[in-house]
Length: 107
Image 1 (cartoon, rainbow, N blue to C red):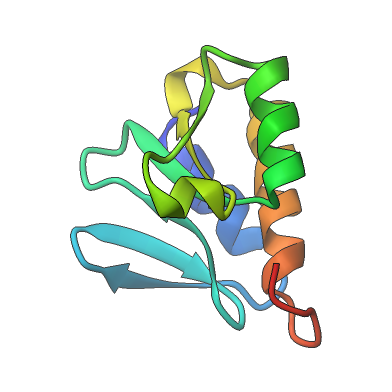
Image 2: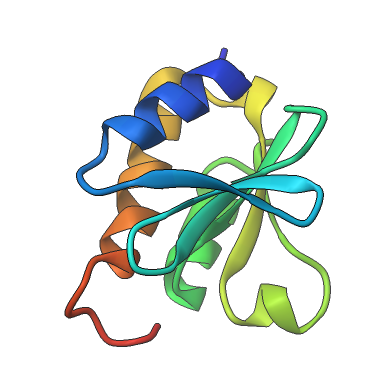
């Protein structure tokens, strides 16, 4: 079962990732934010493409759901950390992180 400490550790192990406050959340970014962690540490919002979001939500419907509103239509996806295994969390982080790397177009 994943948790906030696991997310923080895995995210910060990804090349060039830094952590900074973002409103009431912790944001992890390279060139831009790719995941935010809720203040209570129970959920995180990942930046996926809409196609990646659809796959995640279909594969693990108890763990992933689109963020409501326009953010969700852009691919932002909420994950319930307690519903993820470490491998699922690592995959989600690496997927979102790739979109934030320098030289990548906006997705």
